[in-house]
Image (cartoon, rainbow, N blue to C red; front, side):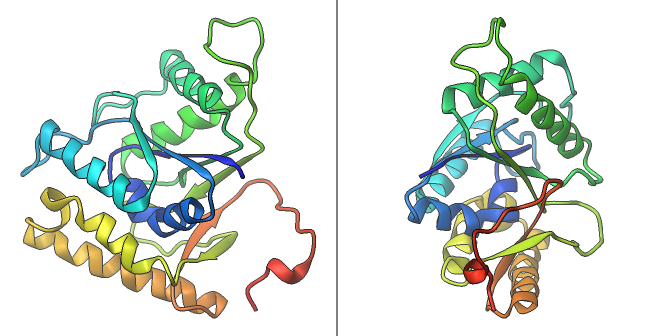
Length: 227
């Protein structure tokens, strides 16, 4: 089993972009940790206290652990301090695989978080540093899509989440102040299901989530391919 770190700029990004995969990985017995870089507040109907209740409920529904790093929402900056904070989490968790948002995005927090994590992956392997824990270099870094741009993802691969789609939607709706109470945001939940349905159709399944990688994936055989 693998140690898998899923980083989100704000609570709910992981659920929206790859909640089905998170659930599937947890069901398979992997050690999945969600790292929220900010608490996502302020928002029109939320509060730090309510948001914590929501992200805790979402994590319980998905069957995973969660941790808050505490950078400022709407003000995430790529700094050495931020890099080292994430590198410390990677070393403590001994992450084998990291998931981060796709680097092209309209939200400055998303772009900054992706660059921070990419560099923290490198920092985590360094010796003779003040970072806690043992050096660790995650073998894989994958990108999930939780973008604010109006374009269609062009992924490297898609993962079947047909059996996890309903649970993913429940985890998204755990954020009541974001996707239940605001009438205009309820359409987001429908859009996510439609998007995952479209991605599923690309690989011959009911629902799927798309991912991008900059590094080639090795297969032991073609049995792993969805036919």
